[in-house]
Image 1: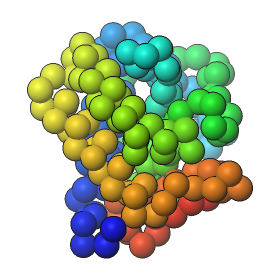
Image 2: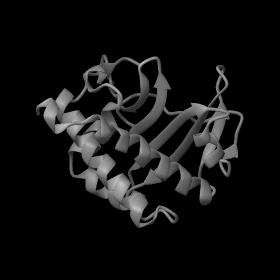
Image 3: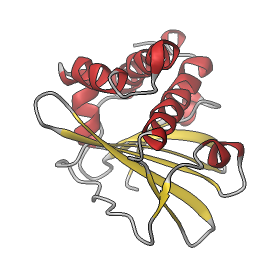
Image 4: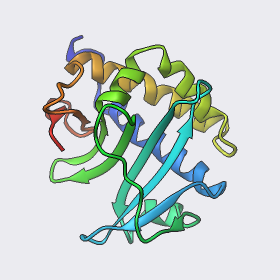
Length: 178
């Protein structure tokens, strides 16, 4: 797939889609957070698909940010049950580093996004109370963009299982070990 098929605004849709999920889960009391050693808030929620499979979502933001304020209904916990990056637990995580905002997918999430499970994921997210029509449209768009990113870069090898997508720099999107 060529880079013309994937734009920076497409990648921004991924981050917005995760914000929609987190806000809806906070409203239903299903969003937890902790504060890491750098003072950032790490939000966590899980979603069960119709086939019983679980997918984990994580969202990392500065404690005093607009995003943290929007997620004020999240429940604080001293420690999150962060699943390992291995193949068994599909995870999608958003955060920020020196290159800007990123969204990353472990190998299990990559497999879901390019396979038939992507449609089940979209349906499960859109069924969350509070997502609404506009939120569902963002999530729908985000899953399409995720599939484009995975198809463009390829599914990551076990040695570097995390696929990072950077909205500010498509060329920085790649597989990494952590």
